Image (cartoon, rainbow, N blue to C red; front, top):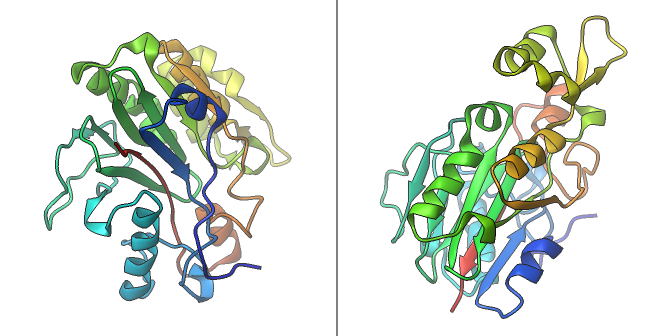
Length: 264
């Protein structure tokens, strides 16, 4: 059962070991520790959802507070399933930029992305003290949001071979059935992409392995990477899932957040 209280984010062993000396903190937040109710029960931080705005604000304050910051310092873009990246050195104003990744080298800014099946990826170069967060659904991953995030970090002083990346809770192959048009989108870019699809019980459909595709793109880009291994669709107690909501015919869904900050 979900309950109010402190958030209980998942932390990546890879990122944790990369910043063993401290000063950089990260978390893949779950539904646990929020005040929202109904279909949004838990730590819903999705400002684009129809949840109560006051509850969303409390939830975002709790996320920021886990990093020792106020919600004003919590920076999340208006996500559009694109390869667009923004480099930030201060909080956004009233208008959030339309993008799917955020990069910074500024201490005390908590940068994050929201997901509900898509892949949240957090990046860090602990030596250069440059961090990034990317929202990598199939469109973003296919169009290059991961590589664009890495490039933006390098321009801020990061070294590609010093960057570690962690893919957080996202939908797994077991629950990601897609149609033939979806498969063709990937084949059109590269025929070798067929290996990320396996047969489905439904004729002309396939099961897509988004985590494997994401990790391979990160490895090909020259960074160390891992997946936390959590499936958003399968674990309703801890994660929101757009696809699970769709299958149930529910009117809306919550979003969890993945966030990272240079804390000192």
